[in-house]
Image (tube, rainbow, N blue to C red; front, side, top):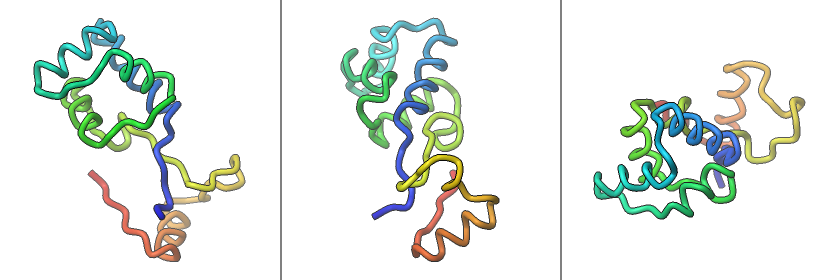
Length: 110
């Protein structure tokens, strides 16, 4: 089990922000993705934006190409699996690395 999970609401908010900054409707974004060979329904785009469903890695990579951003850190937002408010957040990057090593997790920075 992973230490981190996708923060669906914040990720969805970023998808919506990027989409609107490109003056695309949800339908328009789905059409752009289809033109890249990545099939997605307008309903799925709306569900991502509302944080109702988790975006797949393939869709996230395609969106990052469309938006001209990085997948991790700019589009997809992660949080600790057992996040319980500010008290659960690591105090520093070193604290985060310490927690990961205790969990035998590997971090991949892209």
